[in-house]
Length: 253
Image (tube, rainbow, N blue to C red):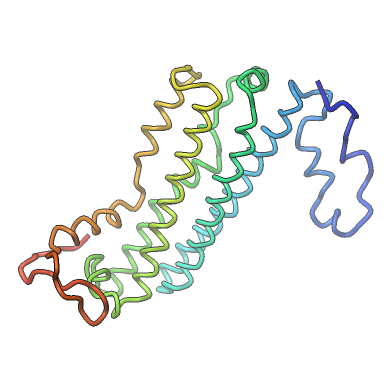
């Protein structure tokens, strides 16, 4: 069932440089035509997921650039790329809200056309999953080059401001990607419930298990280590960091 008035944006050839440069006809032809859609909302389902792949493509480019800057010792440029990747991941989360307008019946009509396909097969998502460990390897190489450990970066922030900014940009991306996965879980629950099986098991169980992954785990652990050695009421140092117990024995993270 298509739109009632046969709405189309692909009936005429491109007439402007803008359309030709952005390849608008090709772009708009990548979604099913109205007459082939299971329900009108299939346009939203396809366009949102295609947009997700484009956003992930851009985020992957920024993560790849991050690795290059890390290996070159440029912490500020690496942090810049990571912040933009985080912004893109945030866009991925927000646009999932379009799919919350799908009713269960509309989704099942679309799902019947999807065949055995699954979001777990997303090339962009799986490439991002593989890219996070590479970013961490580049970050560790930078720390080794600077001769500093992660705890020192946090305890002596004033002396390592660039590295601290980089660490926070990394944890922003980690947190943002976890939020994206959490938003996806809520979307799945909203449409199909919590116990409906998919081709690969119960989707909510699979998603919730994968969401517990922290890509830059040492950045989360260092916070625990700081508070383990924190003395309530301790004075602040010149850099605004708490003065820890002298025998804290902190190690490298």
